[in-house]
Length: 200
Image (tube, rainbow, N blue to C red; front, side):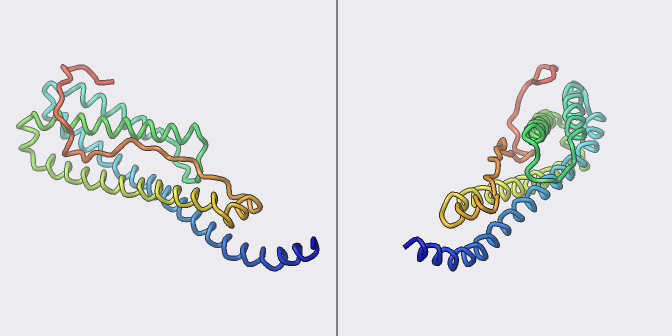
């Protein structure tokens, strides 16, 4: 009886391994590709911020606190490690999420401020840049959704047989859950009054 079971396993396992391992490899590669895209979209968004700072500074008025906050958020993002390896160290992952969330918040608050400044809203360069930022936020959201979706598919797969068995013997560990703050289009930021103080 034991011999028969071993013979069955000897015949079946190569078939399972060939099919399941290939599927897990594709899923793993897709996750890594999505992560690289997330980092790329974050960098493209950050590249737009210096021009935004320049435009707002021209019409600053009482918006100096907004400019200061945006500069600080950009400096935090610029100091992030650029290693595209997935999965990153837990501390590095948390650092990326926190810094990018801070920049998203600063951009939203800057837009809320700009919408109350008629001179800034009348500037064609600002309107064009805001459209670019909206597009960038959309691409950031799409890349992040891709990553979250693929991680979910992968983790669900390795939790079911035969992938769970293959993941165990071929060393495919669960992927870390990636939690983002929701991304709000820059042009839809709610109005707010900060009273000249840097928001925290």
